[in-house]
Length: 138
Image 1 (tube, rainbow, N blue to C red):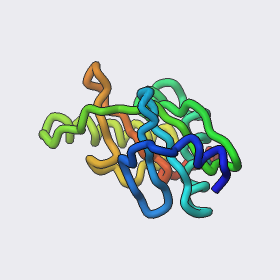
Image 2 (tube, rainbow, N blue to C red):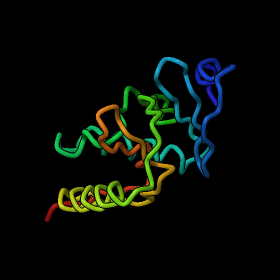
Image 3 (cartoon, helix red, strand yellow):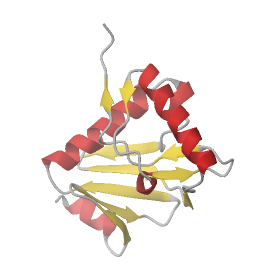
Image 4 (cartoon, rainbow, N blue to C red):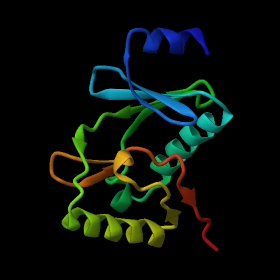
């Protein structure tokens, strides 16, 4: 791992560990996702590409990507704290959101409550979309 990344995460609390990435709380309402492997870099790259290319109508449902670097070895995103409720109301909202993504050519995978949060206005936000698949338009 690059020295700069080590310096950025030194003393920072780990708030999530996945198969390919570790998420640290930077303490400034941002998190850093650090890739542990080639697959982690691929997930970071996918999140950056999807976020940058998403139409504004669905971009508002994606966790905001602030910056990335070093061949996608890390990715800094906005931090969202409000947990996703397990109510019927929000399950219906999630189903409608999933359909909206599919219509825009993005296949959402791994839409479980661990990867979802709520914004202050109650809107669903997806904080981990590294497994999503972008369909090419024909």
